[in-house]
Length: 483
Image (tube, rainbow, N blue to C red; front, side, top):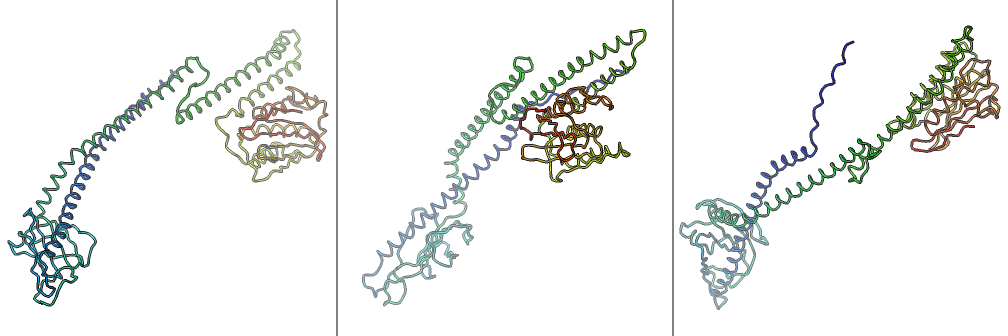
């Protein structure tokens, strides 16, 4: 005999905590540079806005100085011409210029020295200074500009003109290299604080990540210890209080363990039952064959009995029942009943018995198809042995919680006092007809597996036996009831 091939070595599964740590490390490897770059960009934006705000502030000061100087130099007589005021800023690197109605009336020393005039860009008045870059004859500048209509002395050769409203354009700024130097200085001043904040944030993230891994490891460890307790026989299921995400998994594990236990109990039950039931006919056959003149007819009947017992156990073992994994898929009932009918028609094509099906095409139910076929098939087989000419298979769902299937025939029926015996194993009421007497008993066992009931009654329409199966919906409970 060839030795069986060894099972392939299963690779050791990766640790979930290890995977989480790896994902966290990758996240940090990608996140820290992004955090540094984001912090740097934020600091740079803050520094630029701070220097721009300083430029706007100087623009507001320039406007105030201009207004004060204009008031101080205004002529006492309204018909006398006023001279442009003199304005001086402490920082000579600042570039500024004031225009009234398009004519430059004042500018800083940096522009006077090289005789440069700045060109405005604003077309209309603004509520605040607008900052931007622009090129000039003295290089790149960072300029704040505002255009405003206000009352100022008019500086002209017309001696009859006094104070009036004019459009004043204020321009003030600094060379771009000085601007960038100021931005770098501000960024250096606040960069340390931002780095401290970013470091604290990263530290907090690491601490939270470590805490998460610690809690995850602890909870998974609790599940593992609960599984170990079950495997070592200390508990009959996975016991413990777990987080919601793990508790759902534990509930499914317990459901599978319960399912396995029920299947094992069911297998033990059937094994013990068939061992017990086969013991008596085996003893009879053995003793009969040991006699000098054995009764072969008796031995044959006992062999038929043993075959019937084996068939019973085979039917029950093949049935899925309510212990199947999960909820059975919903199936259409009418095609199953039609298949049973057509199967008997093919098997008994010369038989005069007519088999009809009455079932709504839309009727469906959550039940394993093999179990339904076995139930209906055994009922139809029993009816066929006794029917005169007609068998009717019908199905309906009187409520959303129950399915009812009826098989009726026009045979002699079964007296009310004999119906319980007809459901017993080997209970043959008509010894003249062939059979084992287990058809109805098999159906009763299959129905019981699904928590349903099997009832025997007289058919009002056909006059023979009417066998009715009632099955609860998936998850429902109904005690077996046989009458």
